[in-house]
Length: 216
Image (cartoon, rainbow, N blue to C red):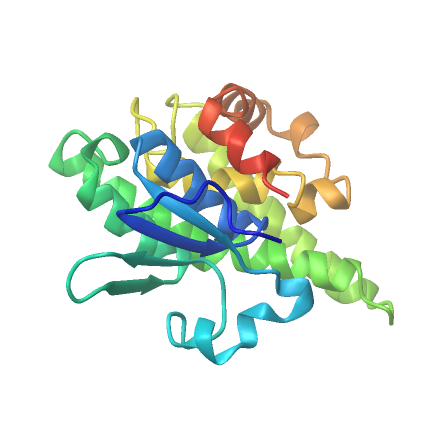
């Protein structure tokens, strides 16, 4: 797949693919109105394992972001990238010290809880050798995460309060993207979590989300 929308003098270079973790960064960059180039890294073809990409992301995982300063600075791990972007673009962060604390807490909650647990649920659900006990175990843990989100979103418009931030961006693709395992395996979160559904439906209309979810 060819590079997308190359700018002759980009400020940022994003190396990514259409997965929930990759989609997060596109949403954040689009929300910020940042100038960036998108370089697709086809993980199905093993492009993330090349020496060139590992020089940016040592663990060979997408996404990775290069900031074109002199010298250039590389960020890998989606949570680290989101927090860099929140620091750089205030519209992605909270409006008070209290809210900024919640932004960081909810962002780390996604990368430490929702993402890994949903990932394990998906891997066992699609395993060639069935393991019903593992599927049930991780399904229960994903429900626990969704219940945490449901309680919070029944109290506020967004995860950190009344402001859309990188905390929402972190969680949305893992719940509502077409590449989410919750979507792939028809996890009935909409029926059980009306506040999460309300939150997701509002965000799905954002132009930034439409673009991120449309990159294939």
